[in-house]
Structures are given as C-alpha cells and as structure tokens.
Length: 115
Length: 118
Image (tube, rainbow over all chains, first blue to last red; front, side):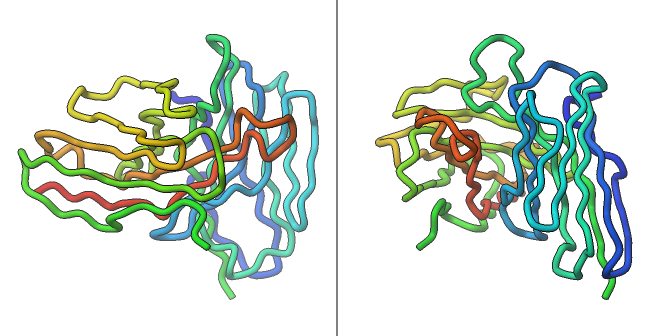
C-alpha cells in the first residue's frame, strides 16, 4: 500500500454536520499537508502540520497528527455544500535526506455535502 | 492575477505524437513541480526544479523531458505519446528555499492539463 492513505474513500453528509477524514502514512515525515480539489480543478492547500505539532486549527478546519501511529485526521466542522470536493493528505518525508518538497499524496477522500 | 498557469487546459492527440505543456508562475517561487494524476485521482510527482536545476526526477520514462528556461517557467515535453500517458498533469510551485515558516513548504497548483491520447 502507499504512503498517505485516506479513509474513508467517500463520505456523504448533510450540511451542518461535521466531516472527519483520516490519513495514514508509513515513513517518518517533516510535515503533513491537506489539500482540497474541486472537480476539474487544481489542488488548493488547506493546512500544514509539522512533525512536532499535534493539532492545528484554521477556521472550520482542525487537523491532528499522531506520529506514533503515523496518522492524521482532518475535521471540517459545520460543513457546507461548498465543501464538496476531494480531500488529499500529502506527506513530506524525511526518508533519504533532504526532501526538496517532494510530497507523496494519497488517493483522497471524496466528500459530498448535501444541502 | 493567476498564480500558477498552465497551457493548454485540454490536449487531445494521437499516439506517437510529440506534445508540450507549459507552466508559468508569477509568485516568485524558486521551486516548481510536475505531477501526474491518473484516472483514479492518484497524484504522483514526476519532476521538480529549483532555480532551473533538476532536483527531483522520479521513475518517469525518458519520453518525458522537463525544461526550465528560467525559474518562473517549467515546461513538460512528451515524445512518442502512448495511451497510458492519458492523465491530468499538474504544475505546482513553492517557495521552498525561502525563510522558515508555513509558506515555505506549501505548494501552489495550477489548474491542470487534461491530456487524452487516442
């Protein structure tokens, strides 16, 4: 299996509910990032959490990182129909020395928020 | 206003042809990347350039050749196109070599080029 695997693969919720997506990875990391991709568009950076951090907030987003379990979660609170998109985690790994920003992406979670 | 732009947005071509995709960023970043996203939405890095120097070169067929005329541009040339090359190709940039902080590691993506090889 690959670095940066998201779970679930698809999530369908109603507006106003919270959405939680999980990501697992295999190697040691410098940081872990979450990106959003709307259908037919490029990726947009949401939030970055460094390996020495455990939790970060940005607006309605909350990211946690557990390096002992090699896992992260992204929580979107009070979801909106506009949050409908694919969400990817990406790891910047320390394996092999300097990463030069080489990100390894998972296959993403497709989030659908129904109005 | 566009931060990272790619041309063309769509590219439909026959097997065996040679094609190029262009990427430009006006963010003043030092580092640029090419990614390939397959039909299952799996996104994989192909190349990265830092100040016109190749720094990441993943296991990509020799038919793919990136070219960086200056640090604001990173073009991708593909020779002898094959059916399996059909995908969406994304260009991205990041400050990377600037000072510390969140922005340093953030990558900014272009809108993508959907390549279809017939």
